[in-house]
Length: 305
Ligand code: NAD
Image 1 (cartoon, protein in one colour):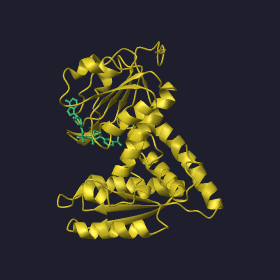
Image 2 (cartoon, protein in one colour):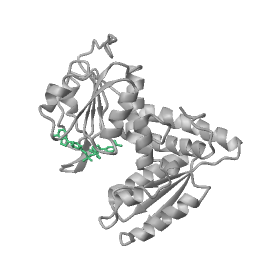
Image 3 (cartoon, protein in one colour):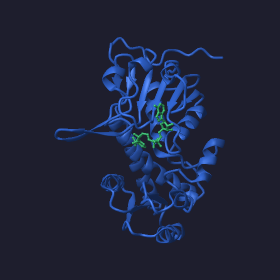
């Protein structure tokens, strides 16, 4: 057993912010550089984004993804289908994109309208173009430690942690939430980084006590302000994945799963909401598009690491 040194020695009584915007900008710069190198070889990575229906939040997410893609020089193709589109229509479009060698990444914006089977759509995407990393083949590869396309939000959280703590070996990480898109892949990535990992969920007994053992806390629950100072060990590093809309007199504001004001009196570093994990998700989507284009050419992760 190795002895673990404190993560961050903090003389300040308040945790420092982990600046997701700045770190995401760094990732996007890395992607932009790699896109330039590929252009020199006449290779132009392309991302296809499919939006079904009129969900306003999904429209905003897709717009942001397309905008960022354009900024780093990744070609983006937007496909929109109406709410009334059938599952067969969606699957036909995916089959067409799977066959199109000029398309490197396929992203289906979730959630899909209720009459469409989300799992059937995700598993229809060619795993080597599955830039969300949700296909069962990529999930299996991730668990086995094989080079695959890994889900964007957990990948972004890992980068935030590495930038904040350096080597994570031997640290105890608690992931709160066990969803397929955040909690489970997050726990797997932390395990691969040699953390001791606990997963806390809705059926856990005394979640705050389990959490107080953690050097690293990753909250992905969807409950505004659930985690406060009483859940944290002094000096813990806190990654708040939660994005919750709270109604205000003038509209709404976004808050995380962590009670930021309370948690920062005990933690050593914390991601704010907004401006923490959110920007990393898009950055890693574009990074995955590059990785996909490399895997499709059989060159592995040479340019992006
Ligand atoms: P989900 O609803 O699929 O899963 C929530 C998990 O929380 C479940 O596994 C459940 O067991 C657990 N849980 C519920 N109540 C709990 C409690 N009281 N104590 C402990 N665990 C509890 O949610 P998700 O898709 O994983 O998303 C979680 C949050 O992260 C949401 O707010 C979502 O909006 C946000 N999110 C943000 C990004 C981003 O880019 N920042 C990406 C994905 C999700």
